[in-house]
Length: 293
Image (cartoon, rainbow, N blue to C red):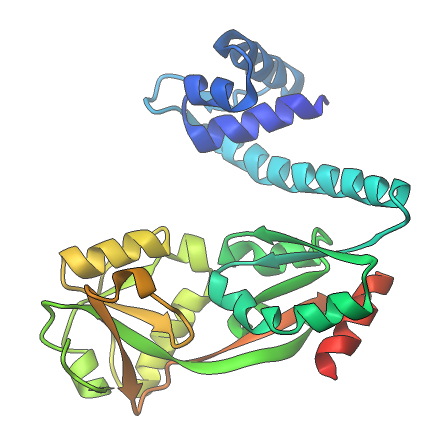
């Protein structure tokens, strides 16, 4: 199977039209169309529903897409590994993370690590939170940095804590709670909430509901969002309350929203570095030794 076909298929699913996919790959629409048709002929199944606008994968296409993304990452990792071998045998640590807050605690460790290990490079990829543990277990990455909830009940994964904190309520300037210095759980659950959807944040969604139950409430989640930018938009425009970790920095919206601490709630979190216990990457061993010291 040609890897160009796989790349075209992934881009088509994500761009959702042939024109943008062709532009992204600097080829013609005809080339994309022919390559996708060839892929469908090779797999003997329809992967794209061309009757829908914007186009969508068929159920089989979604299944193929998930596997194709994994295969594409493995292919690129293989190329990176070979390139590193050719270039003075540099060592590489592949790191996945889901949000900027995940890597903040690690950044302060990097200057001293690079000074002691100039031949070790870190390659970072941002992924969906729901995919973090799956990609780690598949060996696509050496390290995952994410909320501890993503690594629970996974015996093959070891973790090391980077940061512990609490969630804050994020409200807009026009929200009744905007001028509060802190918010009690009784006040919090009176109002409608917004969350990132389960397809984006995986088990963290259910964990939030469990924490609310421990508080003695069932949260009024009236809307979900695919990403933080969309969540912030609805917090401002629809006066919803969002949950953000206390190390998030919304500087560009400081005049429109506030992050307010929560009192007496179970909404806490921990950001951890996770890795497979049988990972044989020599560079990883140096990295773990450095952060633990």
